[in-house]
Structures are given as structure tokens and as C-alpha cells.
Length: 231
Image 1 (cartoon, rainbow, N blue to C red):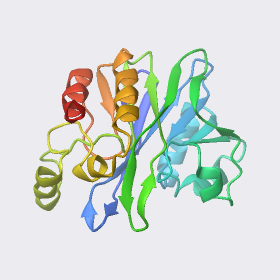
Image 2: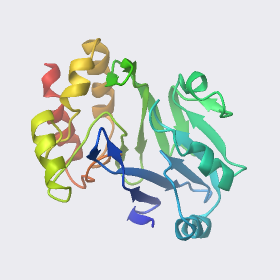
Image 3: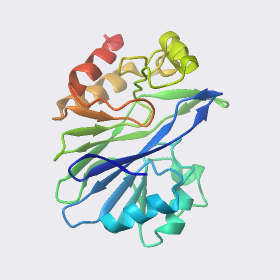
């Protein structure tokens, strides 16, 4: 089900395990001034959620925000056939089965309602070794909400004890930050530093991330603290 976060912005969540760890995942839905809907990092949705979305407006844009949050793109497109697919750079090679209508880099959506840019410098450790993340980060101006995917995590007591203990060790427990895996995989600290400085130039209070608990207040301060490792 969709959960309303603020005026014109909702989230939906589902269970997800990564390397055997329950981390959950979250999609964000934003309603533009023309009532069209933008879906960031889509998840599998049931009939109830689809009915909720349809009551809100027409899905016009489906976004794969990085090279790892794309698994439900095709399923979502099958429900909303008229929607355009926007994606992070590089996904066109990784998912040749998907018709990508726009590769994102830097720009705005709607009447300057959503601003976005490519967060550069991060690689992550996966089964193939080091792979680029190529994450697009977003600002929803009206609600002062920053929308991230894998550039920061924030886990708390609402997660299982195993997840809590793991995140205490690798980072992201009660702190808005990337884990030690992202830090170790970073090969261009200056690009990461420039990217986080661009994010911190935005006007936001709330932070929605794909994995972890939403931060409602002082999100900018907490994100700045979570990136002090770059100094």
C-alpha cells in the first residue's frame, strides 16, 4: 500500500534480502502539478496499490535511479504501458530488453518540481567485483524532500536484530551514510565529495532512501555528518 509522506509525495515498501540480510526496499511516487505521476525505483505492486495509484493520477514517468534498482521496471511498464522510462546512464547496456526513453544526467521534471543529477564517483562491491553505481539523486522542491537510493542508508530498531547488528558494524545504523562497502569501493573521492556538496546545496529537510527508515527532520545535517569520512 501507498503511504502519504507529504503533499504530493507517497512511498510504498516491500521486503528485500541483500546478501541474506533483510534490508527492505522502497519506491517513491510524486504527483506533479498537472496530476501526472512520477515513480522512482518501482517495486512489485499488488492490485490494491495499483488502484491507489490510479486514483491519484496517470503514471507518466517510471525511473530506474541507478544500475541496481531496475528489477521491477518491466513489470511496472506492463501495467502503465504509456509511461516513459527514464534511467541512470549505463542501464541501456545492462538491460537491453527495456526501451529507455531518456537517460538522465542533470535536469528537472515538471514545472521545476523535481530536480536531479548524477551522483558521481561511487562504485559498489557486488558478485562481479567493483561495479559503477551511477545513481541519480532527486529533490522534490515542494516538500523539501531529498530522494536517494543507495548513496546512503539509515537503519534503526524497526529492523531485525540481525540487520541492526550488521549495520552497527558496516555503517548505516542510526546514521545517514553509505556503508563501509561503498567507502572501500570508492575510487574517486573528489567526485564523491563534489557530488555530496551539490546535494547539500539543495534545500531539504526530509530524506527518503530505498533502504532504511525515512528521516523526517534535519536530513541535511545528518547527511553532512554521514559524509564526514571524505574529509
